[in-house]
Picture 1 (tube, one colour):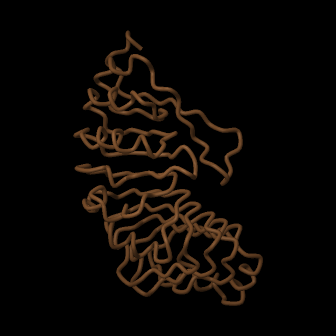
Picture 2 (cartoon, rainbow, N blue to C red):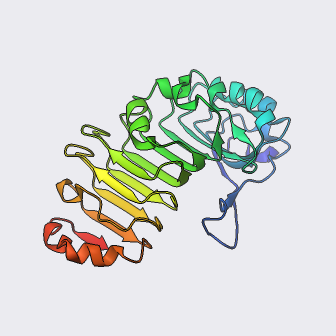
Length: 268
């Protein structure tokens, strides 16, 4: 790497053979030994968390996008303190080593992220921490393999109201997703996938007023058409795939194709 000192973007992902819901399928590589020499680096995707990674990142103050996997709980305080001091950081992926490790995002401070992707359990109090207190900046949020509790969507709507993209994958703790009036006023894309607990989705009138794409995939207990679906006036894409075996019959019984004629693409 020594002879590419002005390198600005470094992508080094490894992909698993099986892109299933059973585990994340992007894996980082060991950081290069001479990472410190890449002082012009703006993008670093994806590296494994190591004991010396925080010291390597400290001098790379131009970094705007950083993706890190293999994080254990003990790494969080030092690593996240270093990330908090990167003045231009706007995109961050954090992936825990496994389901036993917590991502202590509460240790992130002073960040003005526009995109945040997390894979793994959140420590208690995460949504109230300073990483989310600047919710007006965050517009892209993806959460995987995490317990969020019963009122997950409304809780997120209160903390990060300016999202334009939200993805929940393998997020659990809620049987009913009840999205209240005025929630996510700017959201354009919502992805809900592999949420095995969910058996009902309610969209109150006035919720998701700007939504254009709604992907509901592999919610195997969802046997009812989401209440209020037809009220999404700006919807252009709707995917309802791998749901409960009774879902399709309910869709036809409710005459939903006639009610959703304004939607350009429907997959069911």
